[in-house]
Length: 208
Image 1 (tube, rainbow, N blue to C red):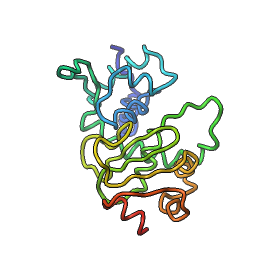
Image 2: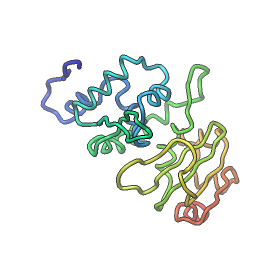
Image 3: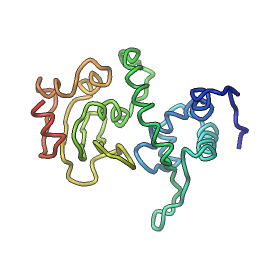
Image 4: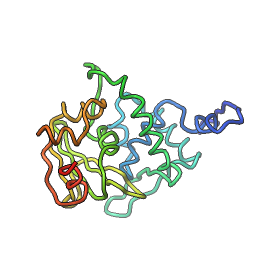
C-alpha cells in the first residue's frame, strides 16, 4: 500500500483532497454509488484506468475509510467493493461537481467513452418524490433510487422490480439534460420522454 500523501495543511478542504484528490478516486466513488461492485466491473466501467492504479486507489479508499471489501456468500463467492457511510457522504460532492462541470461538457468527442449509468447522477438531481425509477436509453438502461436515504442511489441495468416510474428517451435528450440545456419536466412536456408508472416520481413529472 502506498504511503499517504498529504498537503500538510490545517484546512478541511486540504484534508478532503488528501483522501479524494487523486486521479480516479471520485470516479470510483461514482461507480460504487451503484452499490457493491466487483473489481472486474469497476475496471470495465472506468475505461482508461490501469489495473495497478485501480487496485492502488481501492486500497487507499479502504485505508481512508471510504470503501470496504467483502466476499459474497455462495454461489457468488466473489469479492466486491462498496462504499462506507463516509464514502456515501460524497454524493453531494459529486452532484456539485457535476453541476459545475455542465458548462464544460460540450459535444461528445470521438474519443469519449460513455456508459448509460453515467447519466444517473445528473438525472437524479432533477427527480422529485421517492421511489424506484427506471431509465431506458439507446445506450442501455439504469435505475435510480429517488429519495433514498441510505445505500445505493442508482443501479446498472433494468430495475430489479416493477419501478414506480419508467422513463424512455433517446440518448440525445438525456445528454441535453446532463448538459443542463433541458430539464426532465420540459422534456416530458415536449414529448421527448415517455413516462409510465403510478409512483410519486412519475406523477411529479406528469404534473410538473
